[in-house]
Structure formats: structure tokens, C-alpha cells
Length: 400
Image 1 (cartoon, rainbow, N blue to C red):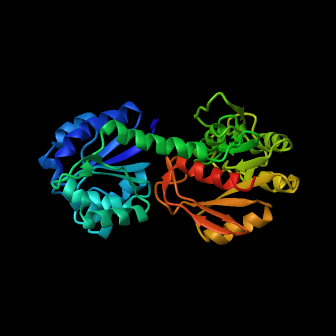
Image 2: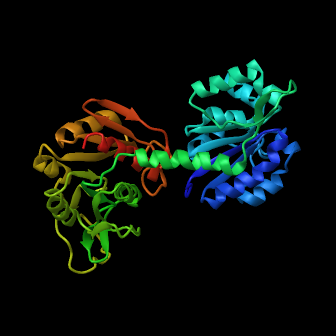
């Protein structure tokens, strides 16, 4: 099934463009979200209004959507999508894809695509059989594109050949099988117990005020859901956030660093791994007022004292068969600071993100990370946090 998958559907100037309506209906029926990108020639065969009515999204066709400078970002589409399907794909479009001729929005989106690309050729049988077309298709295969073979018919010579686009239900079935196979191939964590910390901690100043931070807990909760989806026993130690998690996750709610420290050290004793994603306050007020502090004439001075270091303590506790993953949120000297933390806290790898990356980190739905270990580093594109969680758990699975 394609539930929750984001699909860019590319439509080109073929008589088979009318079948795009059936393709969209089948994709949506399986739970996918569809964004149409159509070539100027494609609009001669089917109207954007029809497509937009089916997808509930504006159809993308031109680089600039209006005359006021508003433009459609092919790069954003490439990062957004879980897959791109070009159906129908004409000989002209296939040739442009094979040779990088980026003269329309569809081709620029294709060249920016980070996800798998599926191509459903649609053309005259003799055109499909031509050596130029076959050479271009072979180039696309060598680039990693998945060609959905067209249906058979008869050439002008009377011999059997291919060219007519495959039916929409079979095209969508190909996409669905691809994702089902990828899901089955993911490393399982069915015998593992993973501890995850998430969210902020609040350190009380008085009964109504606290020291905290902007962490929403979204990244940690995404990691917990990903581990649970792969069959792991998950203990999620969550600071004060407004998020919910599935019933298959054991959730422990805490408020302060001390409470998180006690819960994490206890849970880690019987765990296979811990992922320390929480944004824990490094300091707490030396004293906490029993009553609300009133406004005074003089400045208010609050003395702070260091909190316990959860990562350092778990690193000290870690046995040879346990794994420990940390997070580093930095504003400067990102890599050097992350590497120091990696060594100092006895981490197996550290996930680095930066406030310099706009639209990531606190409260955002996206993140952009770099995974650093003693063996090297891996950089990832900006993507939704649930997809970032999958990348992180893939890395953890490889060392468990």
C-alpha cells in the first residue's frame, strides 16, 4: 500500500494523458498524496483544472506561477516526494531525461528528485522500437530509474512490438510493490529494547516559572515510532510536550533533568541501545522558591547549578553489547564540538544538527542531519523528521 506516501506525478503530451485521472484515483485510493507536474504539451490533452480537482492541489506547470515573481521550486518537490512517476512519458521527454535537457518544470523536477523515479513510456510502437528510444531508455535504467514496460501491439511491419502505456492499475501496483519490498527489506529490531529520550526538561524557578527550551519532542517521538514499527520494545522518556505516541510504546513522562536522569539510567540497564534526543537543561536554579516570586524594586538574581549529565553517565554505564547514540545541536564550530562530545560521552555515533539550517530543529517538522562516528561521517538532505528517524535507525541497526 501507498498510505502516507508523497508522489509527484509527471504528465507529458501523449494521448494517454487522459489515463492520468485513473492513475491519480488509484494512488489516492491507496492512501498516497499526489502532486501533479505537467508539461505545456500535456495541457493540450488534459486540463489542469481536472487534475487539481482530483488531487486537491494546484497543478505545477510553469517555473513562475504568477507575474509577481512567485515561482515553483523543483528542488522542494524533489525533497518532498517519496517517489516520482512519469506517466505517460513520451519519447521526447524520455530523450530529455536521458540527456539532461532541462527546458521545462517536469525535467527540472526530475533532475532534482532524491526519491525513486518510475517511467511509463507511451508512444507509437515504431517510435518505441527505434534504436534512439531504446538507447535513451537504457540510459535511464543505468541512472537507476525504473521503467514500467509498455503493452504489446503490432508494428507497421506487422511484427509484434511495444509502446502503448501500461494500464494505471498495474502502474500503481508497481509502485506499491516497490515500497512493500523496501519495507520488508528494512532491518528488523524485533529482539531489541531501545530507550529514547525526547523533548525538553523544565527546571523550576518557582511554582509557575521555569528554565526550559523550545524543543517540541517531534524528533524523539519520530524515532520511537520508527523503532516500534521495526518491532523493537521501546521505552520513551518524554519531557513536557503535547505529543501522543502509539500504544506499543512504553512512555514515561518526566519534567526535570533529575527525573529524566533517574528514568534513563534505570531503563538503560536492561536495554540494547539508547538514543538521547532530549534537549536537557544543562543548569537548574540553585534554589526553588516555594511561592511565586513577586516583582521587586531590585534586579532578580538567579544562581544556577549544573545538572547531571545523562549522556556521560550512560556512556560510563555502557557495556560492550550496548549502543549509545547522542545528539548535538550547535550554533558554531558544529563538527568539532560534536566530535568532542562523541569521544567524551563514549557514544557510538552522534547526530549533528544546526540552527543555521533554516526550518529545522526546534518546533519544525523537518530536520537536516549529519551522522558522525569514529569511522567517518554521513550527510543527509533536509527532509521530514519521520524520514530522518528512518535514516538514524538504519545506522543504529547496522551496529546492533
